[in-house]
Length: 505
Image (cartoon, rainbow, N blue to C red; front, side, top):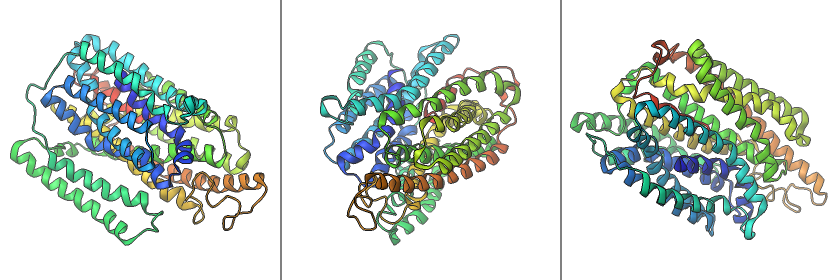
């Protein structure tokens, strides 16, 4: 539970502190994207491998290695002296999380008998909800308090006492377990899929800053070719020793293939929205971290409440229609937000944002909780573990891709140079080319309008992608088999919560 809480909080806590990090380190907008995308990318690339390592070498051992590395990487983040050091430390942190997180539910599954797991997953769900709500608030408070003059750094340093407690308790109380028939590692597959993702996301993130060089376009065009080569290699690996990184036969199941597409695009939506939302509130509108953090609380509460209702009451009766209603509800919330921002402008208040955020939160809650059930319901039981790991990997990949797309849909909607100093201190400061010197109120309104227009453009893209998600959901089963049969199997039980953990970001 400690590890799951640390992982979820670490993602939500960072977004709210990004403007403070940018001001302190003088980071470019692409560096800001990498502080969040680097974690997601390393996490995505290592998730399946982390689970496989636990099966081979022992889940307790990998859990302790992961949580120790995560704690040390948090210290490196907290004491980072430059943007480059912070980005590298975040990538290391994501890699360690990829070792730590897959062991959590595997350890629960091997430690507790089936009749006790319901209580454990109830606790797990409570921890997830607590992390989703407390992450932004904790980040805002720690940034605002400026403890010991450390500004944003306590958001990472707070992991140290929590991580140390997790290490000590883990050594004492967790029992070791391994898979009865462990597969071999597919390191070539890991390298190929990571390379393909980097070839797409790196030039996408740096493109605008470098004026979209030719090598960036070539790299992005070649990324699908590397993915195609990865698929060919995975087929060879399956024939050779039956231990591929990705079980390709899963994609013959239509509901799973469609679900992967839904998961990827939903990750893109979340990656785009949460970063541009933070930049808009704190930099465009000039709000404090605490004010921005409190504004997000209604959204988190709405997600948690709707998620509980959807799984327990709605999905058993209405099946796939619940997820589609969630997608349409999210579109409605985004359109309300778009209309409100366009109408009110820079004078918008948190209370004026609340209706749109609550509607969006309800829609997201209707999707994230039952989505795993819908996707895995037709997957063969012997591949349920691989399928669940692949879902989480794809979700993180989508988030990293969405964070990369911020340079296109958000900063790309700004005038040239406006995003180079994203705090608004760059092209908008007195004396800068095209910026009026003097009246701070005029400057505030100019920065607010610039960021507001970019935010509106991003919301338009988010609404469009959610519409695509709604259409993709027609390929999901009308009703998950577990509900048709009146109950889930032993194997399906531990697969429902991890999806809520990572989608709840």
